[in-house]
Image (cartoon, rainbow, N blue to C red; front, side):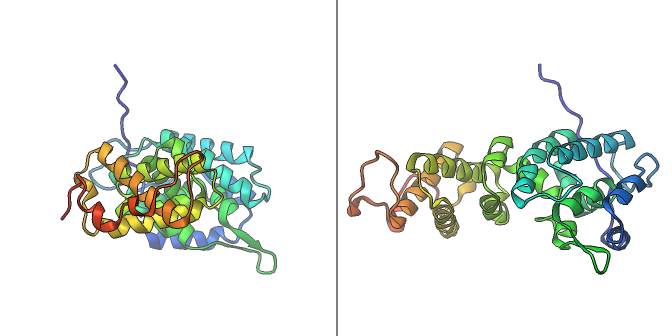
Length: 283
């Protein structure tokens, strides 16, 4: 019988407190930031009814895991954007496995404010910050600190939680953003995984260099059809069939064909009107 993991609640940091702390952090070097952190004595705030709380030991373990992976990719030295993207792909599954956080807790930006600000602020600056030599301060977009969809560590946890480790590693950055920043798609794991999986399969079958163009077109078709068809009452098999039909429509419109696949006559292409007569719920 598989061992049941205990889900933890993590500390929280309000926006005003995180913003004040970052004003100080921006004026320090990565080495100074790392040496000043003391998670064993930090005063952490939890929501009042939190029972299983992440301890200082677990926070130290999380920091050690993230910093260890960052060092494999060159931290604290400056590296290329390509290396930083590979870091994201590697650290996301490890963060998801290490934290064992309650999804409801992970939905709070205050939790990720704490992780970004108190646990790995040096890694956050290494990943997204740019040091301004004249002002002697770090420049970093506030989206990467305080925005739920773009926060540095939180977005990686949610990426793995919604897409699964394999898809999270294989999909490109723009493809993941195209999925997860559309809540109607990204917020429903069965649908987002079907879209991501079908993209990878179709791109492999067609050997196309227009993968992102195909994905954007299929996503637009999905959003239009979701106005009259409910994916939330479909079975996983129906969702797979539905998503496959979207990619076939997009591929036909963009003149992209899978290798070795016969080209459909124009009158055999499934039109939006005919699609409404399929065995999928329509509202």
